[in-house]
Image (cartoon, rainbow, N blue to C red; front, top):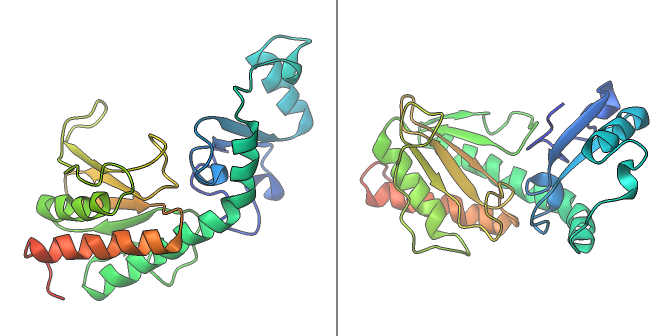
Amino acid sequence: VDNCYGEFTELTEPVNVGADMMVGSLIKNPGGGLAPTGGYICGRADLIERCARRLTAPGLGREVGANLGLLTSFYQGFFLAPTVVASAVKGAVFAAACYERLGFRVVPPAAETRHDIIQAVELGSREGMIAFCKGIQSAAPVDSYVTPEPSPMPGYDSDVIMAAGAFVQGSSIELSADGPTRPPYAVYFQGGLTWYHAKLGILMSLQKMQEAGLISL
């Protein structure tokens, strides 16, 4: 099971309910915002050993390999991850509640049980997506001065806009938002290392939407 975005959002993980093995990224939930790179696999011991032998060589498995001096960051990230993920989930619920009250369709709704950290908001227009992402970027601790704009991306048949002023490039446990600029013009919001940062990002998105004349507060 690819468990990206789902770690620590529920009391059980896929391996607790029958999955033989699960994999994920350490620059998402389980890295807690501290892991600068890496991934994980866990599950049945025999399968993990087979993966290790495939990665290196039969007879060597997990006994060799560089750790790049990053194990402390990995373990600290794992230690903080449940708290960080809880903040991100709280931010997603806050985003859903705010945009629901303004009449936008959100997936999942604010009151629905969460299984990952992603919150979709259907903004109804390209302009809405741009304004939302500008707000998220302006709340970033890195590159807050940057203005996100839709642009082509391989694999998509429409322009994609992304906002992510993160310490770790590509980290989606840090405050970020993105989406293809085509109907229904849904932006996918996730992350926030702290609840307060997630809240600030959503409030800034609302401010940019208001400044663009797309909502009234």
